[in-house]
Amino acid sequence: MSKATITVLPGDGVGPEVTAQALKVLRAVEEKCGHSFTVHKRRVGLDALAAEGVAISESTFETCAQSDAILFGAVGSLPAGEDRSGGPRPEQALFRLRKEFGFFANLRPVRPFEALYGASSLKPEHLKGADMIFVRELSAGLYYGRLESVPGKPSEIRRTQQGTEAVDTLLYTEEEIERVVRAAFEIALDRERKVTSVDKANVLSSSVLWREVVERVAADHPTVTYEHMLVDACAMRLIRTPSDFDVIVTENLFGDILTDEASMLTGSIGMLPSASLGTRRTAGGMFGLYEPIHGSAPDIAGQDKANPVGAILSAALLLRHSLGLAQEASAVEEAVEAAIREGYRTPDLDEDGRTVVGTEEMGRRILDRLRQP
Image 1: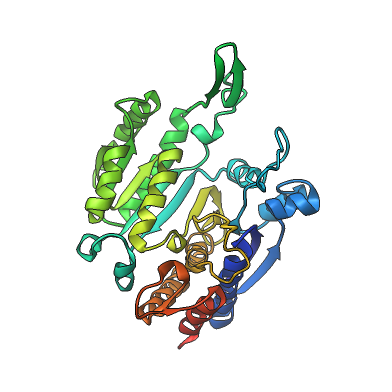
Image 2 (image 1 turned 60 degrees about the horizontal axis):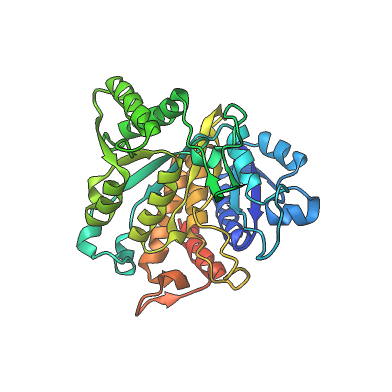
């Protein structure tokens, strides 16, 4: 029997809806396999701003710190027309969790289910054999440009005599690059032993350094083959020959964009899970934050339309990476695939001849498969 403490941060928009289904799956695993999960549910994002005045409270942060894993839903953007210049914003919660807990490696597996080949915009023959994992650097780069070590507020919009201008700073240290690249090579050892490092070394100094570090790390992993690829070439090959890839490692912004593109291989961005990991160990693995890669989708919030698969597969990653329950994780993944194979679809995956169901019904169908002997 495994014991673990999990903090659930449902967040905003469709976050509470999809996270509820993922939590039901974790409870089903707990019951079926005799584990014991202590769950704490807390506010985050717009929900926390409205109730507590901050994107994430100190007490919520402390609860997360004392947990083995965090299950995260989504945080929303500020309502249209609401100006909070210099004030708290919902996304600050996620940035703080990533930064202060040292979550530098964001894992995003992409494996199109054969039953969903028809839902993808690509021809089925292009999808066969596609099975990759992105390792996205998560704690540096353009998204963290505002650093005290770089003078002049390097991420800002400013007024000059010549007009308005904007600046963002792309900063990477050798250490920040090396730790995520090493993580990618270690992951490759348990897969097909192939790493594709994605950069823009023909333009960016940060990418030139990135390549230098990859070369050094690769020398420590002689059984892993590797290649450098420019980000624009990678974007093209993801659509043309996605089966070429195994492990893809890249910096923060490129990883964000490329994984959204890669989600279309599966038919919908609602299908993709993620795991954000650092170096802190738990009894069963690594302390991490788990979330679907889609956003809060306020346009469909509360309508029972959101796809819960990304959140449920994120729960499977939680079982595998933080709790060390690989068999249970595989059982969840197989239950998801079984429900899809039987023809159940949420509206984002609507196909002729399939049964379109809502968020809760899709979750129930997956639970039914999971609970089977």
